[in-house]
Length: 299
Image (tube, rainbow, N blue to C red; front, side):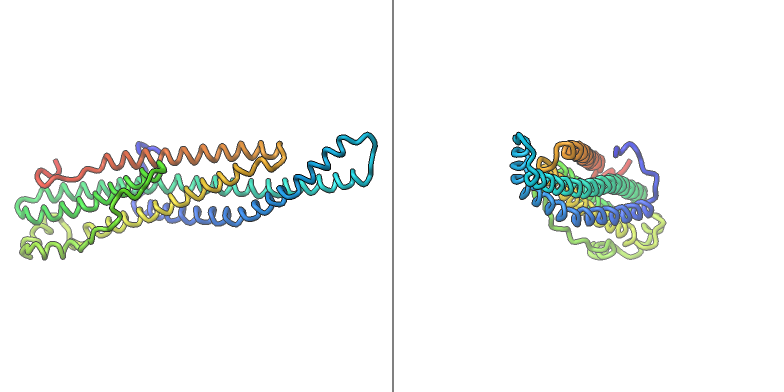
């Protein structure tokens, strides 16, 4: 999920892809959450019968002659333990399948979201160039550039929060209060810019509705922020379930626990790689987004 691997999908295509992958992610998490109680119930049953089974196992091993009743009790307990082990293994295999599917969805969502942010930022930069090319009407130009800067600051805030979350550091060091966003036309009215002056600038910029300039971009950025917060919640859920699974594998038979432990380790590595990608890409986007200066806006 490297930023140099540019995504050539359009903004609507990226939004559609994110939406579908988000549905798939939630579906995998729902299946995982339905499986976990069954796994925990099975592990609890194994924990309850293991002492008696271990005792019977030792007794049978130490016998010098065949004792049918004791052997029957041992075989019955052994069959129950094996059945439970196989049942838990099947549920754990299914759970790890859902975890891996979920991680694939997270990787896809975050890559598409990164591409979407970069495309929106590119649109803002292109619009700023148009504004800068218009001569005169400096107050109006400054107002429009400031509006663009507000969106860029939102992008930087989102990526910084994401960077901190992916590194498992505290994420409350940022001001989470949203700035009040007036439509740009309302801000222009407050500036008391004459209508004919606004019209001349819009005509030169070839734009019919000034509010449409930033409204779509603001919505996309807000949507991305919500999606990325949901995704990080899912990352935390998956990590929590992996820890739960990992902490109970010792209750299973050695051959089963060894195979499952390898799968858990593989999923952990996949999760850590994704978190590293999220961290690195958020940092790169944060550093690449430039807040425009009031003078000499875009060269």
